[in-house]
Length: 101
Image (tube, rainbow, N blue to C red; front, side):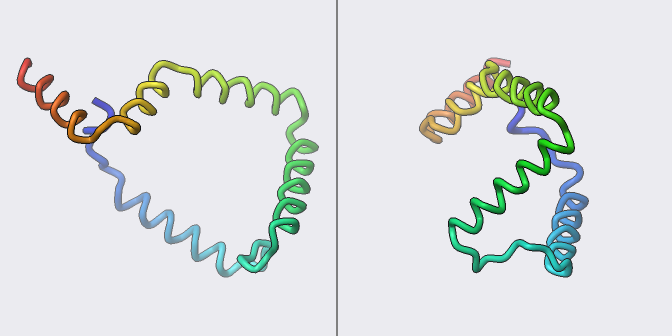
């Protein structure tokens, strides 16, 4: 099942995350933790406008449709059900499936 897959690239992902966080701290970007909600919303809207100009409305609509289809997929629904389920019951079901094989 998808939750039992071994993570071979765990070290690589960790080092990538550390590198990205260091780059984010070193750059003089507009992001700061001290901004108010209104300032963050204004910045998010400005970023969205810039992205829309760069990508174009057609591309954004296509991406939105793809994301909507993915959210409605059977696998995504199953993931949500598993996350919302009782963990003990999920473990029992997985163990019983393994015993059947």
